[in-house]
Image (tube, rainbow, N blue to C red; front, side):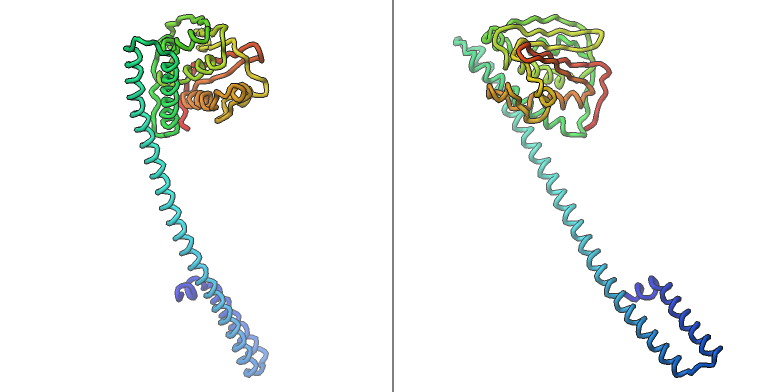
Length: 301
């Protein structure tokens, strides 16, 4: 308080003293009544003391406010750290859970493969469960800014062929023909994430198609992989929104098959890997998704 009233108010003190000296000089030069001077000096001193008291009260209030602000900042930071830790714990647990659930999924696949009874319906459901587990796991990884993307050259065929094998029952059951132009061309990407992108697009094509044909081809010049179906197509009003999170569109609501997360994940992965995904579609004429691997640039979200 003393420091505030003396050091931080030096200019005010100097101004007050200057006024007193000026007043004394005026009274001296004009030979005025010194009793009046004493009265003036007393009034000046009283006013200045009141000013200092008010200033000290404001200073105390300011100190209290500053201390409260610092305390609030400290409490907020502690709460924020607690929330971050809770979020990290939740993500760690969820990742562990996804890894663990993949073990019984793989075991179920083996048991079905060894079984003499062909149960294509159960196999298809297991594939979808595995797909959703992979989506959840990779979504968490994509939102981790500290995770590096392992970009490397990979054959287009190595990305596509395992998916065709996994979804062969879907093609057979829905009587969908496959036109696949095998490509040994190399692209620079992260194989697992690129495979997940292609899987979501292929799964989407199979989900809404019944009969007809799905064509998969790669343009080496433009470095674009295209997946074309002969499904119902996408309404023009839905096209700008199909990559939004949770957006299922007209077809998804009609069939009650879409969660709106698959294509959102495609867009998220494409952004993180520096790829580009576009779609061409006309209602009643099917859809074509184009995934460009050209000039891949790593993006940190």
